[in-house]
Image (cartoon, rainbow, N blue to C red; front, side, top):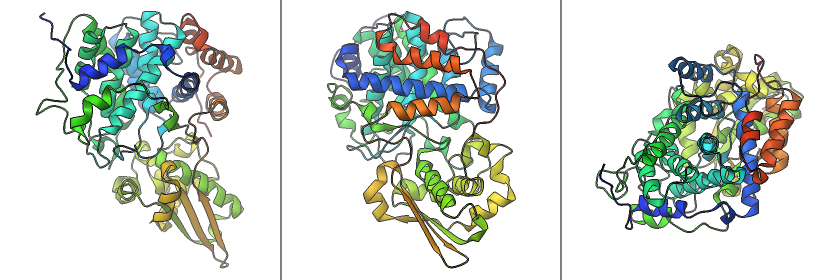
Length: 478
């Protein structure tokens, strides 16, 4: 086929030239360490999800297809082709809503949220496929995080397009970098992936479906395919950002600056430092709410019936107003909607005094007792909370007892949040907790050792062996 040149100043060409020119040693040591932390955290999230209904369905569908055994799938001995391993692992790592999240608004665009770790399965598959050294796997993860941040700079805060659309840029770039593509072929890989990626915000609003959990995994799978196609010489639409009917509607904040933003030099403060580790299996906006609710329950000694009224307050932000007005979250009808429902998260945490995967068992969002407490919550927003802690989605709870006593709790930053980015203590504690009922202590230690020494490993084989332990039938986790 006739080649299409990637030369010039187009946004995709600039992004590809920047990525192709990077080396693992270009990233500062702190970033490499944090890449290990998010990798370990994301692996733990995936192992914890092996018994999830949606994850089982995806794994069963892929197994039924038959496949070329190329790349490792978390928690099983049987391998899959690289694209299908990305879909399988992407589903596992995302489905419980436990993986890391971007803190605060992007300073350029004001766009919020997202989970750059959704694309870690691409790095795992491409590194295994190419026999990469461990440090290059970590560098590919960091490349994905950087591209995610640059994509956020180009998206409007009120965009109708979901942030996972950025993965159409990040996933093929990560895979192509590990495959060793030159800037020409890498540009075509990114163009092929980006052309299939735009996803509406509707995937996580209203009657939220299982698509919320697999939407990024499907984009990441396409990104892996795009890199393999580009390796074989397949070309993509390099002018996606410049074309009149291209991606301008998706990356609409500053389309005229797309090339400069996507192709900018690597900053000293890498984007991975802008993410936090989740403590609870729910959306980012609910982390402080759960922490505040559990603190309130301790204040009242667990006597929920003693409360006459409960007034939760959240940061006065447009995104919070949309969440509080979303009927799918006010009255959730699915597991996916429940973990995005502030009403449900507060009610079930207050009743149970804990919040984990067990709180979704038996469709607790339909429990009359939970529903009754949800209906009593007097939700509001507070501009002062937004000023003091909007980055971590703060929550304040005010309650009055039937005896007239007032109770107040404020959480500006939930467990797992650090202003300096992911830290070893939060990650190691969480990994031990969420993997405890899934794999043995020896298997957990093997994974931790493999991840934490990855920057010195000459291959990724030890990591791949570690993440594929035979797993017993799972039980729900607290």
